[in-house]
Length: 291
Ligand code: CCH
Image 1: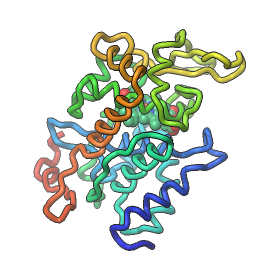
Image 2: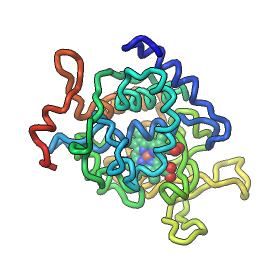
Image 3: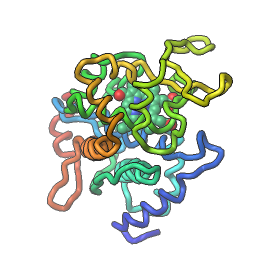
């Protein structure tokens, strides 16, 4: 048990659990980043509902959304931290874990503020279907991310999180990692998007969705190929998105700066703190059922 409000102690303990040898590529960092993103990415600016405040994924209606498949692992990994620092809310813990993981994997510092609350029941959960579908393309990305209030540059910067982690056949149906070193944050994703010869492929499995695959220099034929989702690839096929892919591929510093800003914005969506610094749900209570 730490002193309530001792977020430094929580940060230290999160760093301490990141390396997990038997898990994926040896780190739970990427799945923690995805947890922070999916907790936040349900936000809708028009109805002012969704977002990281509330930690709705603790409930089946949100946690069991097929879009969130696999994130139970992230939540279970964080449970000992919650037990040790029981004063922290889940919604603060999940967003903080994403920020700490990005930094520990070589990424930028990202501003993070405490004060989120956890829903006491299921009445204020956002509806399913607000998270993106990797089988689609740029129109879908705009539809999803404009709803959260992001612009084209921010969509491309956020997509750079796919430098991290991998797709799992039993979670999303897609398979493979985007880059050769998926536990190191960098701008490699953008470089590979532009540089490799991507081929459309349906992996050898019943019902597998098609994805883009390629091998980078030095990879053997029997190595697992690198991959891109149809949504990732669409960034190179769009007149507004592509210049940002090119800029971020050329300039890692610019990417880190923009990513840091946009991720900080993502985890703040729908979080309104009162004078005590606590984000309650009064605006949602008023607008209940206005989804
Ligand atoms: Fe993502 N992502 N993501 N993603 N994502 C997946 C995995 C990760 C989409 C689809 C998928 C963002 C945006 C999008 C991460 C961070 C971010 C997977 C594989 C799919 C599918 C899931 C599996 O099988 O386990 C789509 C579509 C979009 C549209 O833009 C954004 C934004 C972020 C963060 C800022 C991370 C990290 C992973 C790796 C997770 C892991 O378990 O390794």
